[in-house]
Structure formats: structure tokens, C-alpha cells
Length: 402
Image 1 (cartoon, rainbow, N blue to C red):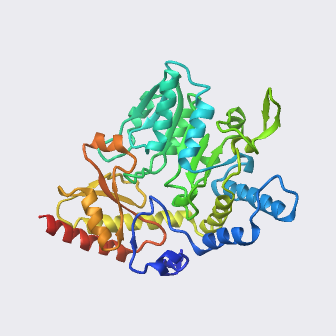
Image 2: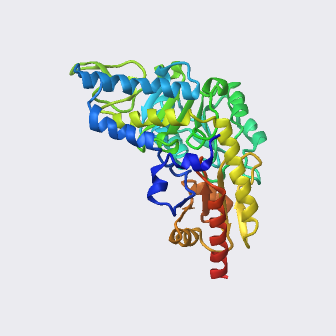
């Protein structure tokens, strides 16, 4: 893997803000020059709407837009680019499955399983559909380390369960879930599985065929791409079964005043003028990400987390939230009785960017009986020196509030 100094040279943000200590990559990653230039060049010299125009710019834009599907398919090991649906992000992808796929399958008394560590985006859509359909949302418990209780999960599986939706890497605990085993267990009962890969897409090798997940959702902005673009992967048979939930131009085949027939998969899920520049930017982000070995990225994230945990042990009254042996580059903690928002404010004044709050996992915080955590999260451009600065300031904050 390239040196961190070399990698940081790819990201203009660090040239613009040389004092920035950015430890918030779980919220959004920074963008390399190739992605920024690719989007800018599209608007500067390639801009055109797609699919309808017969002039050169439209044909070229359409071809480039569609070519990104194959890049994404290759990135995640999908069997066909037709299994790749463009969305606005992970949240949009999950909502599409909840409303377009599960709602028509769900009956009163049926069940949906999620874990206690899910992001609101992988909780609320299922919660709403269950309420509308008279089904039950069941929560897989965690053990004391912040890991899925596998024995409890297996005991919850039965013929009533119509969907398992599980996060790959917890955005608030950093835990890497045993999704291969969970998917295999769910499939023994014929249960479709959606995998939330928002945190894992840039950090772990992903192969949807090897995992055998039925759906996979992720966002471009967490893998060095632009905001407002995401992907839903779905097995071809399930995408054919799934109904669109947005209607309008470009997702139709024939329209009359009496009826409408839809375009084939995946276009039937992409109504209106889509985020063309976002898709183009996503393609450049995939190009950039594939210059790295994601196995090596994962190793690097574990090294950074281990370094951070070792250094955090030097800070008085520190409490680590989530202590799984299988974690990625996320560390959540509390500093004595100091509220995480106060910690974040003090750190921000020193140009240290971290995240404080419930991290869109409010039920998990309630379960842990804490108001919030302070979260440091890493990416390929993160350095040990930045962790050192974080630790020094945490010691100062502790002294200030002592």
C-alpha cells in the first residue's frame, strides 16, 4: 500500500487546510482530485441529459453513465450491471427495498429482523412498513462487547420472518458483523437479506456472490465519491419482482391515459433526470478505490484503531463504547462526565474534526444508557500523528473539566 503522505497528496482538502486533523470519515470521506476533476470536466465539456438525445454529447454522456454500472458491478462482484440500481444513497436504497419489495410480501403477523446497532436508515423504513402491514419488527440483541448475539439471532429465525436487514460495520461501535454466517442461516428459512454496506464499501473486500446477500446498499460519499449518489445491488430475480416507488420520465416503456408499463430493470427504478454528474463522479471514485487492495485497507484500519485504543488508555476517565475483537477504523468513547458535544466543540477549536452525538443510532444509545458518544473514524489518508493530537487535546479537556 502507498505511503500515507503519498495518498494525502491525492486529496486537495489537505492542501487547502494543512492544519486539519480529519477523524470523521465514517460521516463522509474526502474526495481525491481525480473525482473532483471528473465531475468538473463533465459539467465543463460533457454536460448533457442522458438516454433521449441523439446528438454526440448526449450519446457520450449516456454511454459514460451506463458504463459506471459495470464498474460498480465489478467492484462488488455482481453478476451483471443490470443488478446495479442508482439511488441517492444508502438510505434511499433501503427505502426502495422496504417499500418496493417487502411491502407487497408482508402480511399481518409476519416479522422483520434487524439488529440493535442499526443506523436509523436501516431501522425506520422497516419499522414503518411493519406498522402499515401489521407485522412485527424484532431486534437482534447484542452482547456486552457490542457484537451480535448469534445464539439469540438463530433462535429468532422462523418461517414468519420475511426479511433480515443487517449492517456490515456498525457506524457507532465499529463492530464488523459475521454477515456470512447470518446470511447463510437466514437462507435456510428462505429469508431475503439486505446488507447495509455504507461503512464497509471502502474498507473491506466485498463480493456479493460469495456473501450471497440478496440486496446490498451503499453511498458514494463514503467511498471517496460525491454526495447524493448511491447504489442498490439486488439479485436479478428480486429486482424483477420489486415494484418501483417513484414514477415519471425515463422509467417507463409505454404510457397511456389509462395505464403505464415500465422500462426493464434497472431503469424502472430510476425516475426523472437522475444525478448524472453524481454517477460520473461515482465512476471516478470506483476507479480510485480499485487502485488499492481493500484487504490492505482493512489491515490499515485495524492498525489505526489499535493505535488509537492504546493511546486513549493514557487519557484519564476514558470509556470505550464497543469493544468487539472484530472492528474497523471507528472508535467511540466517552470522557468522564464531559458531554460529547462539549468534547467535540473543544476539539473543533483546535482543528480536530470528530463526530459527537447518537450517530443516528439513538435506540442503541438508549440501550447503552448513554446520551451520546464522541467518535473518531479513519480512512486511508489518516495518520498516527493525528491520533496523537487528538489524545493530547483530550488530556487538556479532561484537565479543564476536572
